[in-house]
Every structure is written in structure tokens, then in C-alpha cells.
Length: 155
Image (cartoon, rainbow, N blue to C red; front, side):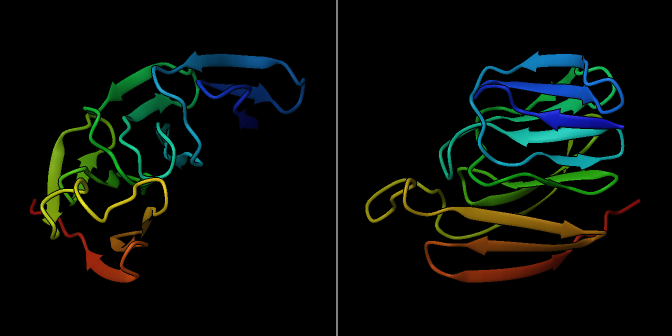
């Protein structure tokens, strides 16, 4: 029964829909423009505009407490399912993190080795990750390539 809103570029609030009161507000180190991904009790969001470098934050949806933050290596949006967080890094890798601990549990490498250099305009292109259950789609807007994966962790 909460509505999550962005009152400014650096903050996320939880509004109680019954009363309209602010339940909590969390301020982040970076600005954010992408919609958060909510899975279970964790809100995941990426800072930075489009394909600019940013952090991925894991925020408790009931308290607003920051549970974890990745290094500043994210280039895409963030996607999540009940157990994992997915995003593309600056090194052109799809990272899969444990949603509770942010531990790296899987990755897929793409080419080029990173998203820097000649011919790459990070303000013109964007990169997207979408996940449903264990099915993952990765889209590179600069080259119009679409990749499909299944993530099946070794138990």
C-alpha cells in the first residue's frame, strides 16, 4: 500500500497511499532517471542518465534503508526477479547479483571489452536488460542487437 516517488533527482520516497504521508525518504549519492525494479522486499535502481556510469542500489522497500551499493560500473537499467539483480557493466558484461547480498553469482561477457572509445556516444544510445523468472533479454541500442539467455544457477 505504498507509492514510491522521486521528489528530486537524488531521492526516493515511500508514500502511504491510505494517508498520503511520507513513510520514508532515502537520498542517494547519484541522480537517477530510470524506473526502479522491485522484487520481494528490495527496490533496485541505477543512478546516472541513459548509458552513463552509475551505481546500482538495493533499498529495503519497507524502511528505505540502503542494503547495498555496487561499484560505479553500471551502464544499463537494472532488472530484478525474486532472487537476482541484472545489469550491464562498463566492461560489456551482464552481471547477475544476489538481490539480498549483492554478491556476484553469474555473468556473461560481450564484445567490445568496454563501452568507451571512438564511435561510442553514451548520451545517444542506451542498453536495456529485461528479466522474467530465469529468462533474460539484453538489448544493445547502439547496434540494435538483442540477446536472450536463461540464468540457471548451480546449486
